[in-house]
Length: 221
Image (cartoon, rainbow, N blue to C red; front, side, top):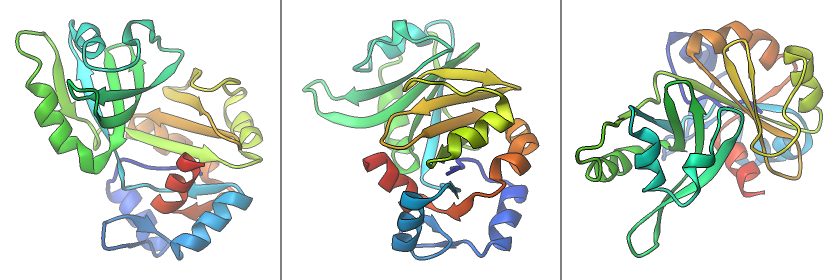
């Protein structure tokens, strides 16, 4: 399964060609959601998700700022691993769950797109004098999610190797490849739109198109 958080004319034309539709909440689907979930349970599928977004944290104080905000140990994060973390209120109530990834110049925080406006507004209140920039980065990068019994072999043919433990990250030709936990192989691929477009033909070959509901089902599983 492959999930997109970036949309331009290339992806819009691709969606139109495959008769993509949206439900009342703005989630993408190609056939009925229950049918897409069935396909996700039984085959390798490709999902273009509209429901995911990215907050970018950069600046010399980015690590220290995030360390003071999140439940996981941000100082232990490297470019070769990802973290599942929570952002909580002072009383410990979870406000958002996110996947945290690091690169040479900052951090990408993957969260539901609908939570970004409120999360950014509240999080910026705590920046104060810290030298950190927080911005909505959803339209400037692409993250693809891959899942299915045979997806590991599919990616190995593309990249030569894949991470072998949950949350491990490998780097291939400008892309981040992260293994996700779950009962079936799952991977996250991230990079610039141009890098993902270059790899798109082989990444999408032989995979069944599905939408948001199927990927959410895999997350829950």
